[in-house]
Image (cartoon, helix red, strand yellow):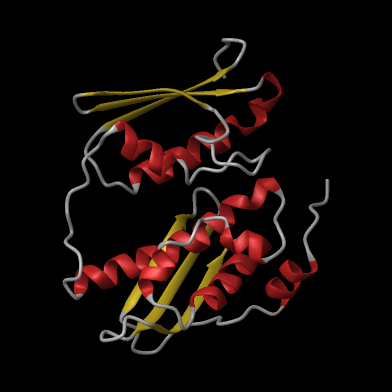
Length: 219
């Protein structure tokens, strides 16, 4: 089935803004992974005194939605203070494009989180924030899992009610995810997305994910 894109999405895909690399950039980051098929890299020039994003460019390694969301995201943040950008929601790129097919909503998450990652590294470099070790709690895991979008509904799997259980047992993390009986086709995609985001926490925990049908059958 062909995906339906808005005219604005098509425009940013065919004529992306701010494509390339910022020379003498003082902030950069890459979000996504080849395993999941979409990646986006950003280079930024942030004024160290005003903390304004003066220039930003991107390179996309993915689909049309990946390119379009990265393109619109650069326009959204250019000229803004980094604290304002840090407050942006992960679906703002998709909203600015007039919406995306549910299966492509993860591209908006990549686009916004990639910029936030670059800002975070910049803040560490200038001493504005410390590179503290992240404490692994259920709340911290839920916050990470809110970056995983359900391909059918275009809603994160936490708000969509797919997280049945999270348990932290010493160095082991157990997560049980439930899907509707007709959503088995999305199990592998959701599993890979969850693993990608949890691995970004760079913790030493062993992560175990179980995906079940709401009928109780293992997928």
